[in-house]
Image (cartoon, rainbow, N blue to C red; front, side, top):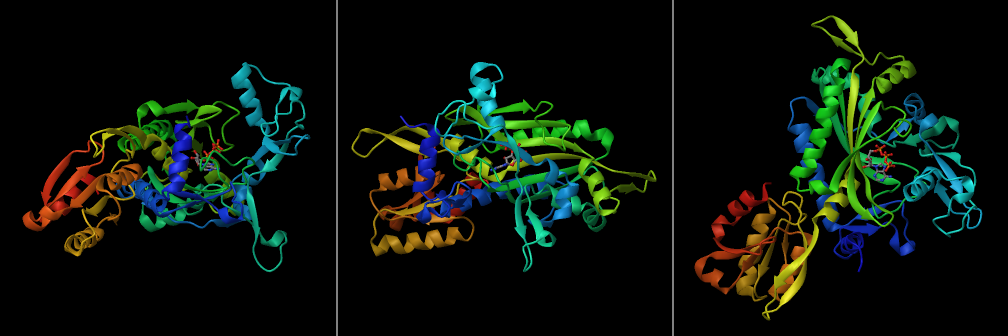
Length: 456
Ligand code: ATP
């Protein structure tokens, strides 16, 4: 029996959510491509996030900053020095692994810290052949200009956050925001991960949705707690099962170099080696970044409060979502199997993606009962009218029951069937994905019906 994660991975490829990057050349685990349904789902997650956290709040503004940033940015931010992972190599098969991950796996299993000779290579299974760990930079380098030398050395951003710090003064001056306020942005980030894998969970190219929330230092703890709750509520509101989410208070020694407190939200992805994985993190970055950029650039990255006449460096509360990890969590969470009656009076197992309608890649499918022009013409017209507002599929191939199943499997909330009666009563049958209940709705009410039920 394949695991849910395997089923989801399979479905994602078969139905066009996620494809392996460069597959015809053997593929890579570094990155994945988002297919016709995946790009819709990803956009919908992003839109929900943006509307909720950026547009929907008076104390937030948006930004879209660049991916390639000068070396000095990453020196000041501490990434050049500390964004490193301990790497160990198996001398039997020459595969490299994160030393700390091997130690953690051993500790989970045996309840104690292993000696070097006890580590087992996850690739070839050989024991006692791992080297001492050595540090390895997670930054991806690139050289700009005609000569690949130190002058041209730049880094791709490993987090979107720095662009928001660099623009702190620009945003304050341009938008006249004062702390507490935040900047939000979504975009790609790049990390030279030693062991990418677990489908889209860990890749070298991925997307984040991040907020830097600038607050007076005395308010940092209160805002931190609020952001943990708001981040969590956002997932619940979009239908994530609370049983599959838990908080992990990251202990000293395990936090990122800039953080004094971090809470990770972990999701029960159902990995083979242990169910849970980090979905997102909320960190109190204090004044670490603004202070370091003040030192690095000579520009005072501070806020001047005209009312009190006080100048200070705000603290930053940073909720950082992985967009692609969120997409994976929503897919795993939505995947379900149940029983549905078939046309022969029997029962079929059906696969349903119970995605929130706001996230569903296809909002409704228009299904003419037959390919005959007398149905195809008006059904196409209906689909085109609805397309002005939503992503709509038109499907006239195969038995109606099979078409329902195809749409259940990709999470389409509503199927709109145009039958021969429609020509008489100017109405269609709308079928609900979850309850499979059907309702007759007059043609001029279809758009209003969908709008009311989809929530977008
Ligand atoms: P991990 O411990 O899994 O490597 P991290 O603690 O380094 O993650 P952060 O630096 O807190 O991650 O990044 C914020 C978020 O960005 C993560 O919670 C995750 O959702 C996402 N993210 C980080 N690295 C990757 C990656 N390699 N692939 C996909 N998403 C990632």
